[in-house]
Image 1: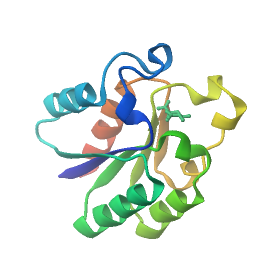
Image 2: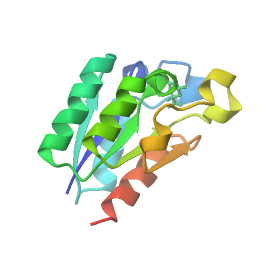
Image 3: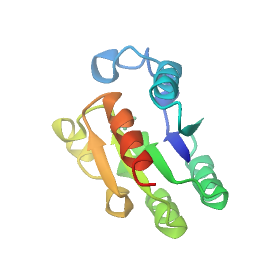
Image 4: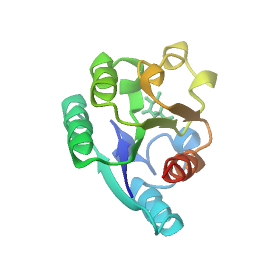
Length: 141
Ligand code: DQA
């Protein structure tokens, strides 16, 4: 089974970016720990700071027939109708993940454009959220 782990803008800065909010682990650390935790799953990682590149990668994932997507859209969560349309338009099974508890932060982070077209949303559990999302998607078939 193949799952896409998709990370949006500024998540390449994990480890140095606002560590009090996002922790000290890097995106490479996250990738390594997920690969170790789920050796039976073919995990494909992609990060981009560009909305269009994320949309293109979702289209590609749908063409490839991936079983699901774990998606941290970063700030595009709160703004991107285009990413929402990409999820709806491809019919991909997507779990939205946020490291921080967006509901405990600024009001503009309380709204997700994407959540209504996702299978579910995991927020505030740090890197464990990615693990739980992979476990959920991997359990489906
Ligand atoms: C985030 C939350 C977003 O509001 C923020 O813009 C991010 C990271 C998170 O993982 O907590 O870039 O998606």
